[in-house]
Every structure is written in C-alpha cells, then in structure tokens.
Length: 130
Image (cartoon, rainbow, N blue to C red):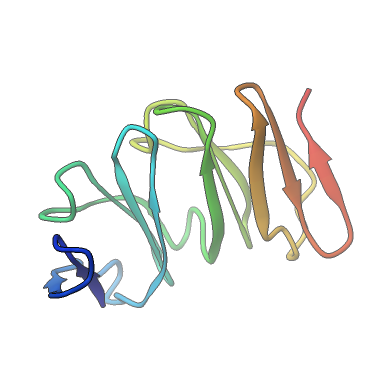
C-alpha cells in the first residue's frame, strides 16, 4: 500500500493505488523536482500530479519490469533503470523511451551528477552519459 501524511507523521491516510495488470505491490516512491509523484510497482510505473489522489499508468510490466531506481536531472528530464534496461523521459514521466544501451540484470542505481550528466551503476559496471 501507499500512505500519506500531512502533519509530519502524526496521522496517516492510505492512498488508493490502481492495480497495474492486477498487481499493486509498491516497490519505490519518487517525487520529481516539479512535484510529480511516480510509484513503481511489480508491474509498472504509476504517475500522479495531484499528490496521489489519482494515478495514471505510464509504463506497464511489459515495457519496464522491476524498476530499481528513478532519478531526475530537473523537473522534466529523468532516467529509470531496471531489469529491462534504461529508460529516459523528457516530459516529467508522462512518456518513457528505452535507450539503446548495454543491458545487465544488475542495473540498480542512477544518479545525476550535473544537469546533463548521469551515472548508472550495477554489480559489474558503471555507465556515464556524455
């Protein structure tokens, strides 16, 4: 489930997360610098622009299963890494494009080191964009 607090953790409200292909296990929660909420589940990525009151599916499990990390350089440009590879968005997570890069099952982490440069790491390699 996904829970939200508006009072520093004193009280909590459970949010309704729609099932993606019948599965609602929440793996990770991300907030872009522009305030867009992205939730990765075992079956895809959900996006909310209203603090979790409603969600749309932006990636399903067939496009990008097993998201391990999402990071944004700014309010619009971000990367997602997971079992199916590395994906990029330039519209705050509305759409994602798979990058044609070497894919390893161990791609687990992404970080932006500057507004135009990112690192993607795994168990046996480190990629950097130029």
